[in-house]
Image (cartoon, rainbow, N blue to C red; front, side):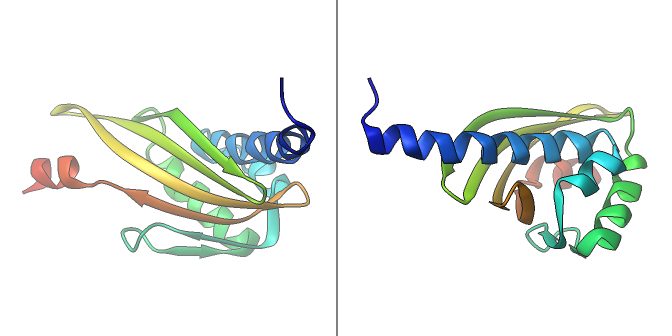
Length: 135
C-alpha cells in the first residue's frame, strides 16, 4: 500500500509520464498535430550534440520532417521509465533497418513536462554501433 505522499507523487508523475511517452510516439510516427499539441510553444529539443537543436513549434515541425525521412526504417521501444515530478527519464532502444541489417541504438531522454506540455526534451544516443557501420 502506498503512503499518502507516494500516492500524491504518483498522481503527479503518471500524467507527466503519459505526456512524455505520447510526445515520443507522435514524433516517431510523424504525427505533427499530436506532437505540437503536446509541446509548449517554447519547447527545446537537444540531441546530445549529435543532430542539433530544435526550438519552439517551428523546430518541432523541422524535426518531424527529419524523422519522416526515416519512415519505415526506424522502430522505437521504451525499455524503462524513471519519473520524478516535472522530469521523466525514458530509456529506449531505436532499431534502424539498413541495407546492412538491423542496427540497435540505445537512447535516453530527459523530459520536462509542465502543465501537460513537454517543455524540454534532452536526448542522448549511443552512436558507437552506427559509427562502426559507417567507418
